Length: 470
Ligand code: PA5
Image 1 (cartoon, protein in one colour):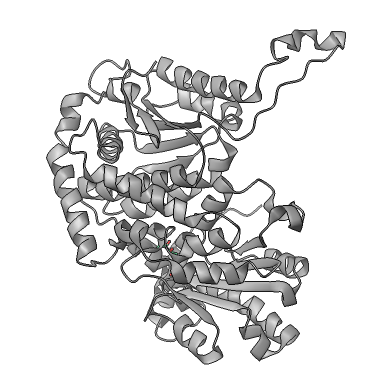
Image 2 (cartoon, rainbow, N blue to C red; image 1 turned 90 degrees about the vertical axis):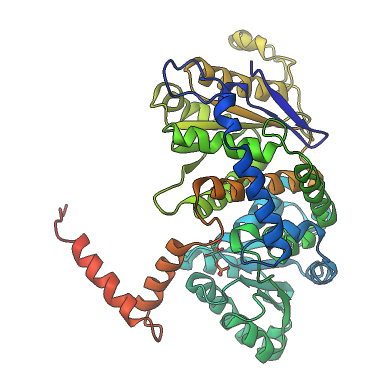
């Protein structure tokens, strides 16, 4: 169906013919090869800037060197965590989503419910949102004496993370006493910023550095993501090796139709310029559900600024075939679709045959593999989108393993950073996120943030000028 496929040998295949054509839409909404080639020089320059910025340790550009970093300290800390029954991590956004993405893709589902002997690694609980009920539940589920507590914050000050950590730290001290409690804590934070570094010095707990030139949403391949992944038994060296493999391939491909990061970036921006201001990512693999969540933050926070940015939309096949496909096919032509499939999933089952007469109409399923049903579902969705004249590209990953996931992460980080250059926005800052944090600090009474509290109160007055009560 898709006419053009590019393979990054052994890592993944990108098929993009139906995103490059005009998708059957007559008139001026199509994206053709001529339009894409218009981006080639910009992308070549952007790539040079990124690599130079990384070498010069410019703010936000350090993610490019993460696949080659020395991770011995992280591995040592991960080994220490493996001695506990459970790990509780406080962190949010870039200090949390990557962890869930790695675990979701590479660990068996229902991890915490697998018996300890079969699991071979601690249970994992994430405390990211501000939800007292969640924290209380986690506290009841763990044995504090057998649990390690990680707190991750690049800025070392995010209110949600600090509040959640304070909750556990307070109870832990009561349970174990301050000295033993400190032996259960590991802090991951910037070398200089925030309160966590001096806190770690004060209580004498373990700590790992979050590199200064790596931003939160680009930090999954640093201590942020690798620590819990390593503790739970994911081979983080292979993850980095896959990312390095992708990085090396990308650095050697100087044509837009060959380099998948250039291609995905140019297609995304070209379709956005044609009025498709949403980018829908729809894997047909439960293991990649959290990949979409991680990508949404990466894409949304990196590109949503100065009035630019397409909105990332998370979908999951086949579930959203029964929820969103109606809108996707017959709704407005304002989306670029990416369907992700894994060609050789780890497990398969044969759909069993049965003899009840009432079920004879289901005989078309008998004896078929469940994975082939899933494959056909993905193909049907792609076909339905194509039929409706909307642009779709597909990414096919041979297997979901550390090497391929590392490569996929590196590809998407790279294409997101490049898209920032094409849109002429800085992909490495997040003033909108900081604004929200500052308002919260002000409202919660943090010293020197009173002007923020005043501003948010004035804005809130505007919010409540008209009201309906029921
Ligand atoms: O990507 C970002 O910069 C943000 O989304 C942060 O990851 C998030 O706000 C958490 O920040 P911190 O790690 O400083 O607590």
